[in-house]
Length: 487
Image 1 (cartoon, helix red, strand yellow):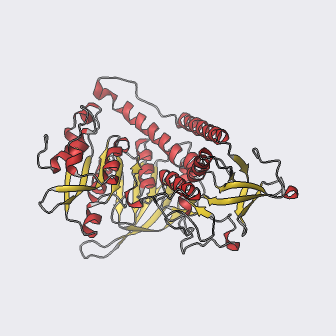
Image 2 (cartoon, one colour):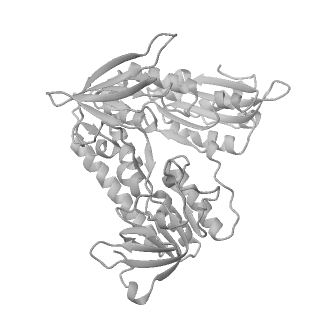
Image 3 (cartoon, one colour):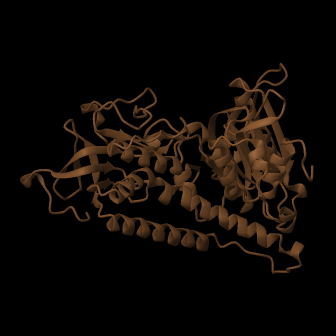
């Protein structure tokens, strides 16, 4: 336990302006922001500071995806006239590098917390009816912290499927995939959302034969349908099989150490649904994450949960218990680390009486690091039409982009969704959807355009540097004015 060992029941609870339960991005983000504002802050974490994102999510996943990207680049080196010996993959070295990055970032977060004078308590914290927090530190005595405000940020855990009991080898969730010491030859990824597509892409690049089984009609629900279709085609070119509209019903382990996954397919063109089976060496269950309020002791408080287990909170992250806030994966908002950061800022500002603007969840940025990458913000074309907008759209592909040609990565497109004005011209930008090289790094200007309610003509007038990948965003905007340069 850090810094708080001098407190205990005998001397009464230690008082803080804010007690945070949970040290993931939303929790430590709130602690850092509150500390910067001069608040006296305690942070309670039962595992490791940094949470799922740092230790079993965003950071390790992206490191392994970068390993896959390097492997892919070396494999294509001959196209640049760079002749290399046939590459060999030492996945253990990548895992060591991954852990070094994770450990370094954890050390950095701890240093920031110390700098902001945040007291960190190692143990399980639960909320009491009087807005105090009890901390069970294992062999140490139970401690009680009293907060003027309490922020709940206990995060989430992977959802599992009935009949698919994870053992870490045959049946895995994201937790186990990120700890693999070798790549299975044949893998079924159940779930074609952001996490499922990232794992499918990584495992395929590293030599696995991958099949994605998705219940919804398209992969990556939430992205524009044109992008989803393009990604499915790109996956198919790479040898990744994508099956949508199918429901997994079970699996039967085989004598060789693998298993046979059974699933049904949705009826097509008026036909009957079909039953099918797939032989694999490993199954990755990636069907989402559930909130994790299990250890917060909420049954004895005024904090309410909804029917799915999320903590009920208003637009400023205030729960039904006065002075208690909830942020991050614990509430029913997009499960993204950067959304957790944003919610943390909103909650702390509200504690300080600064009247913050709520997070606009419909326009937050999304970034998926599969290959090709996917990034988007704002409305899809279908969602814009359903909302009653008269819509104008434009799409341009990276095929003709000079920078994409130079880096030998031309798969993908940019699609802009805009509101059509009365005179027929494209007006306010409603959505930006991208697939292609490094689009996760290019989304910034699209995100700003959507959130600042910029018009197509305003964005089209801005100068894009040449030669860059981001030129395609500018070209797509320019084409919506009716006077594009290259298409």
